[in-house]
Length: 471
Image (cartoon, rainbow, N blue to C red):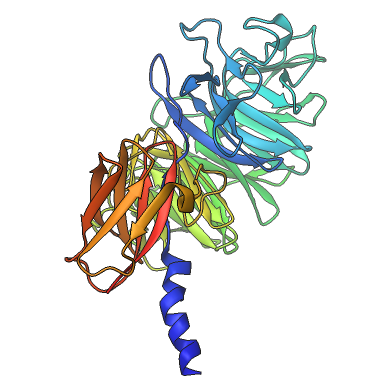
């Protein structure tokens, strides 16, 4: 029995705490303007990303891409805009509806045989059929909406689209739709809401949807629905397929993200208080059925994405924030512990707007170019013990670590060039970092406490992981 307990003491921390950041190939880059990854989803067992980007390395991917296990690959011609110098459209939300992958955003066209293919003018909403992107409604009539599709949601087997538009188009013709459209996989239905807004920039824009207590919850930037007095709805509303109802007094600033966690509704956004300004909120709130409550100490700036890892039952937040409400560092990515918010792996150097989990790995996307303590990752990265599909090479063939266990020095020999050596403890904290210039590096480990450590050798495209025991 004693021997069995000793083995658990040695190996259990490795199993639980062996997470680290991984770059995913070259990430994504842009040729003109800002670059970001705004959404991550899994479709047909492939990781899909969307956003505003042009390339991954030398590969043109046009704002949507799929991960093949080693590199980011294009999906047809992707999302395109004939009016921009780099021909790249702005892809936004991704959602799976009726076994098809839909992409919203702000773009004229998607897919086709060439840019400006008239049969592929999709007008800010398109679907992927496994081979190409297509307009949701076939020609010759126009398809889509006349503006930006910012949010996508599913309720009672219909697809809801929220954004900055006032008309939609399908084979039956043109319909009025002020900020909200409902699609039944064949045609648009009469819009269930006409939205108007006076928050911030002054127009209606649902940004996210979720379903809670058998109702569609819509969050965004609006203060009125179907002609109600301005302020009667403050950024959030519930729909039961018949009527819209308020949820308390709403918020004083827009809602960007909605999730259901442990059966309760959570909202994140730009808000700092309820709509009546009677309850202070720090960018994230929980609905208790009667009122909006603070979630711990909150965060110090906007939350653009809330995400629930259902496998591990964890709630994450991403956004512009850099600290918790108590001033503890939380650079753009944070986890709710049930008591407070804490940073994930040293955070990032820029905004996180997309979060997705699969197995034991957490994937994030945004405006950042570095994760953790200076690891290069162009707008997409993975936090986990063994990243799905990340190009982790066979370290037995390409690297040698000796002596191991070590006391004062350890040598790391590798065929990897221009790499960075990072050592982390079992809690994921970085304790050493250096550039590996030569094929053989000598590392002074005399300053480390006795125990188990993880050595990562990375060059932005490949990763080698080794375990070190310090005596």
